[in-house]
Image (tube, rainbow, N blue to C red; front, side):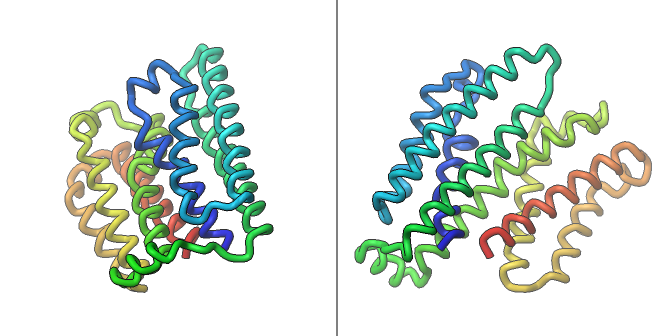
Length: 238
């Protein structure tokens, strides 16, 4: 029950924060619009299972989301030196409040009742609503959020000559494919096959890894963080 509620609220956050938030709005710091989008997405996602406990949690998350965004904006504005700390602090706070809201709803709700029409559709497809939500959550989580997070974490270690691939977004696309394949292997319990994915990725950069120690360390950090993220995402909703 808790995991399902957590997935619903987390999906709203991921969609509004990483997919429906354009660069234009980020640069203008349109906090009101962003908070409105988050509230709207969260409300739409919880409509199939809506009850008074979900509404209370929705109001709580909408208010706290707006406050966190405002605090993040104020912190970044007052910081003279560029720092990624406000971004990571905001993500932690969002997750903490989502957990609190999920515990609240799970404590008051025994079960989630999906509409009959939704049950019928998913019965025809051959997959349950919760399983579908879980896979959508995992795919969306290991895509943009992980790409952005890893990029921010590795920015201090990025080699000076490592720019062309990043401009084409090749690294991000390769990382996404790598995580999706690992996720599939995890779901079918083929854990040893994960090594093949990492080996294939390393072969493509073997010469550069062997010749450039700085790049080798940068590459290793990126690969480990990417692998850790998909394993964590899988364990969260397993």
